[in-house]
Figure 1 (cartoon, one colour):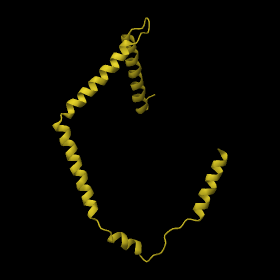
Figure 2: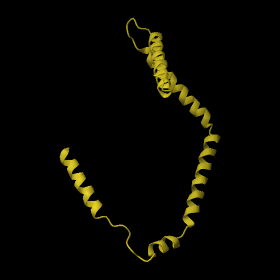
Figure 3: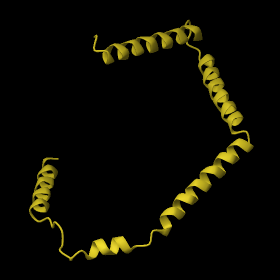
Figure 4: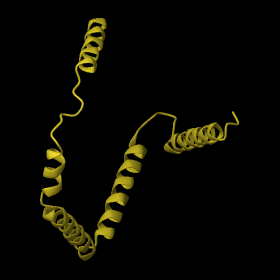
Length: 119
């Protein structure tokens, strides 16, 4: 690890001492960049807009909001069903929920107080 640090420092020093600023070319690079065609720029913007509109229309036509709502409800149902199916002996799922809610509230309170610089 130390050898890598030394090597990195040597490389950084070498490149710092041997860096090439600008190669004098009498403005050739600037003229080339200025004369490059710009037609692809508006074509790319147009293509992006057309694709975004197509995706939005597909989402609306095929009831995307209902699909998202159903997916979220299924995930919540699966998670709560998995939580209820655990067997912890004398600990019931409601006690686990109460513990999770309590920890969440305490954590949120600590974060809010830290942001306000009260603690």
